[in-house]
Each structure stands twice: as C-alpha cells, then as structure tokens.
Amino acid sequence: MIEAREDVLAFRHFPPQHWKKVWSTNLLERVNEEIKRRTRVVGILPNDAAIERLVGAVLLEQDEHWQLEGRRMFSAESMAEIPPLDQLPAQPSLLDVTA
Image (tube, rainbow, N blue to C red; front, side):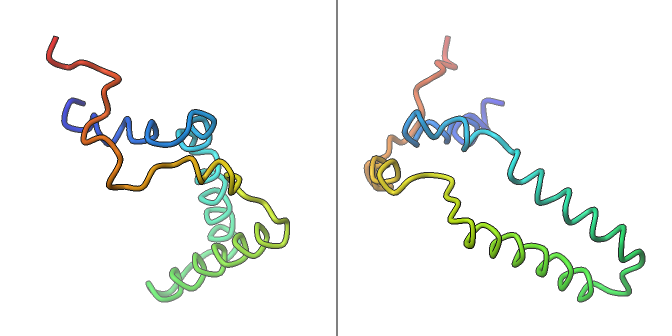
C-alpha cells in the first residue's frame, strides 16, 4: 500500500467537489456491464478482432449517447480550478507513512 500511496491519493489533485466522481468506479462498472451483456447476446466470438469490434462498438455507442445528452462529468468552471501538472505537489500529504 505504501508503494501505491501516490496513485491511491491521486484524486486529491482535483478540486474537492470532483473527489466523489473521480474516486467512484460507477461509470466504468456500467460500461463493463454493457460489454458483458453484449458478449452474452452474441455468444461465441471467433477471434480477437471480433472482440475488439464488439467492445469498440459498445464504447462508440456510449460516447455518442453521452455527447447527445450533453452530459459532462465535470463542468468547465470546475475543471479550470485544476492546477497545471507542473504545479501539482510531488507527493500527496494526506497520510504520514513515516510515523
């Protein structure tokens, strides 16, 4: 866990109002469930290219759905609060692992 500390706490580089959305995997889980559902419907996929086409189609449909709905995970105003990468701290300081 100590080695993964920076990755686990990376969400803290976002503004606090983004933390719940960044930390949550709900969106990813929903997309994965749709991919699983589609593969069950198709049944047997003959090769890797068929799998790539199916997953690609699901992802393109999902992206199109989000574009048409005008859904955004974060507003442009809240994204402007995120500092440039070169201004982010080297290490998150939430936990002191030296104690």
